Image (cartoon, rainbow, N blue to C red; front, side, top):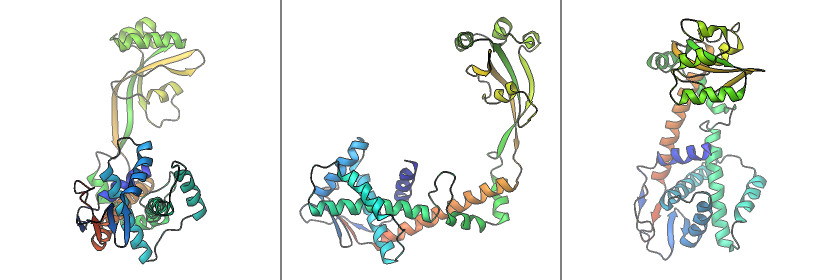
Amino acid sequence: MRSVFLALLLTFMSLAEARVFYDLKEGDKIAQVNEWALYKRDFDLLMQAVAKHDAQSDMNNVLAGVISREALAQTLRQKQALPSLSEQKLQKQFEQFKAEYSQLNEHSEAILFSIFQNKAIQTHYLKEIGLINEIHEAKEALHKAAAAVSDEEVKHYYDAHKSELTKLDTAKVQHIQLKTEKMAKEVYAKLQAGMNFDEAVRQYSLAKDRHLKIAGNLGTIKNGDLSASLVKRMALLTQLHQVSKPMRVAKGQWHIFYVRQQHYKLKELDSSLRFKISHKLAHEQIRQNYSAFMKKVMQDSDIHLNQTYVKRRIF
């Protein structure tokens, strides 16, 4: 889903200066991209399928996506740069898509298949250039672009985004230790209803630290300290000034945490962070290149729309 959304977003970001003529008069022809034509009956069939998955889908946005992907596919064919697709897999997916219709004539099936294929072409193309990456898998194009990012560019980004490049260093936390889940839930409900945390510690906690000046004080916990107890490490999961939901730490041991203070520190510009920054900068450069490429694709394509059906400008 995220890939589809990103592909659509990147498409619409590139269409502001498309060369489009709203001059079609011919019958039920809705749109034409060079020699390729889309008729109302075929577009209505497409909208039926789209509506099943998204009842709020906008006809104009769907049409804009269909046209831009057709223009992209035509351009890639001309440049002999079409991404490699598994025809067998594509045909199988289309058969599942086609099953939503009771019957299709030969022309409508061909048009719908081209629309279906163009969507796959765009997604695969974005993957090839490194703009869409599968989880835990970055494409060679992105790695190559990241390798071209200079140390100066990485350092400049680091210096300009220090407020974003921080990590939790220490936290001061209080806790309530309880024996059963039932009791933990009851105490948590009281805290949610407004009971003071210190009061709840002194009244319900089974830990000896309930008698401390700061009731239930776990002290200052250092993030990343492998010698810290499991209780302290779990305490770091709670946000500042928040009361955690009951957590089971061990058999017969439930804890509720409250974080009084947190201290963050700037991450070191080590090899791991350099890798992330260089890939982020490379990804942005690829996005800009794709946006410029799609802008030219749309300007070089001969696109015509029928205002009888397209009530407002979509490019």
